[in-house]
Length: 330
Ligand code: NAP
Image (tube, rainbow, N blue to C red; front, top):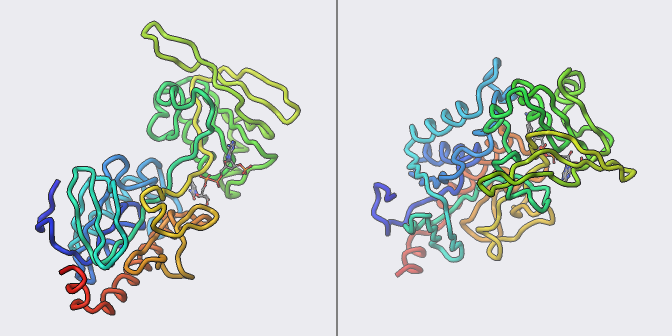
């Protein structure tokens, strides 16, 4: 999809990613009249909140708001201030030098003096042998997306953090029983979520337990279908749990595959930024949101991080002499 500007236009800023960080960077750079181009992605535009139900802790919404509605508001607000949004993935980034090149999934190459990377994070896998094969056939990473398929069925959720707690609670709307499988001896989720989980009559929490295998059988069409899981406790006791669904919610890893080899990363795998700024090791390249944050990872902290990146971009552009840029690109 081409945008309204000629392809060889050197823009002020391109934002890669469209979660709370990317859209907030779009709102702020739009208001600064930098006419940002946002590559929102086509697989998961809007980011992780598109998969959640009610967001209860985003300030300004005392009654809560649905994740997709919140992200639609972010998008509309960025557009209101002149952000151009295209629903393509970035497939290649060339971040060195004064003019950055961003290649989109349709082959179009966009140029800019600065780039904000806000690619978020991707869900972790258990890495069980048939996990990928059974994805969509019992195994899921998104209760909001797939929960309704498990009406009156028994399901398991893996993980002990806020994501797993949220998934387990959401699934109680459909499933007749939810087994929450926690590898440690306590929940890591916030107290309010942990209390809700532990007191819910439909949720059974299995501490010190891991998923050892996913049991499946072959259907007449040759495809595999999940028929249960095998759990292992600390003593190595194996049990069969006859669940029809397995929801994996064991955290996320920052999406850095596009910048590996170009940007410095931290030990935690996030993009390294200088102090409280969004500045990466390359001039004109900024990063914001979950892709730089191994700790807080909230919608509100990602949004704040997008605001920081937008202001860093403004200062960077104000201090870059355009003549130097033109000489470098001549
Ligand atoms: P998380 O806090 O990192 O928790 C991951 C959980 O998965 C931990 O219990 C961990 O166990 C377990 N785990 C990791 N690898 C595992 C494996 N291979 N097998 C079994 N269990 C495994 O991740 P999260 O729940 O996705 O939350 C991430 C961040 O987002 C947090 O800051 C959280 O507060 C935030 N968040 C907030 C909300 C909200 O406010 N509504 C909702 C969702 C997420 P160990 O404890 O043993 O390591």
